[in-house]
Length: 110
Length: 113
Image 1: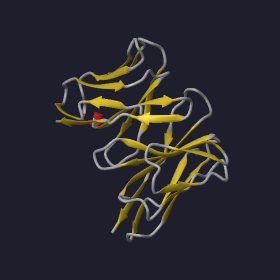
Image 2 (image 1 turned 45 degrees about the vertical axis):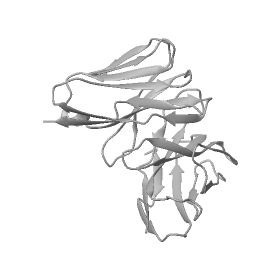
Image 3 (image 1 turned 120 degrees about the horizontal axis):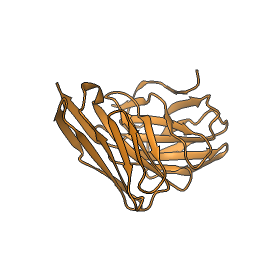
Image 4 (image 1 turned 135 degrees about the horizontal axis):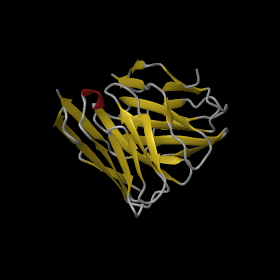
C-alpha cells in the first residue's frame, strides 16, 4: 500500500538553528498538507501545496512540493521554543482517504 | 463556535470490554475520519466516511467498528477483538472537495487495564 515516510524521526536543535523535515511518498500525490501537533495536543493544519514545484512561506516556515509531486519539505529558519512539536505531512489517496507521514518530532533547546 | 468535539477525553476500561468513543462536528462537513496514534508514532487511519450511511475501512480497521447515521456524528467502537487498544484516538472532518484541511478534535486517550 501507499506509504508516506518522513525523516528525520527526531531532531534536537539549539534555539536559533534551522530545521528541515522531509516527506516522501511511494506514489504521486495530488496535493500535500502539513500539520503541527504540540505535545499533548491534536494536529493543526499549517498549509497545503497543490502544484508541482510549489514553494510557500509562512513567516519563518518554508514549504516545498517536489517536481514529481512525490516529496515535500518543511524548513524552519531560526527556530524558537514555540516551534516544539511533531510535524506531519499528509496526502490523499483519491478525494477522501488521507494518509499521514510518520512525523518528525522537533525539540528546541533554549 | 464551529468545531469537533470528542468525548470522553480520558477513558479507562478493563480488557475484554467494548468501548465507544464519541465524535460530533458542527462544521457541516461531509467527510469524517478516525485515526489512531501510539506514543511517538504517526497517525494511522482506522475508518473514514465520505457521507452519511457510508464508511470505508482504513489501514487498521480490524477490531474497530463505526456508524454514520447522522452527518454530525461518527462514533467509533473499540471492540474486544482489538488486541492493543491502548492509544490516543483522533477524530477529524473535512469539507467535500479535492482539497481542504482536516479539522481535528482534541482526542480521546483510551487505556485498557
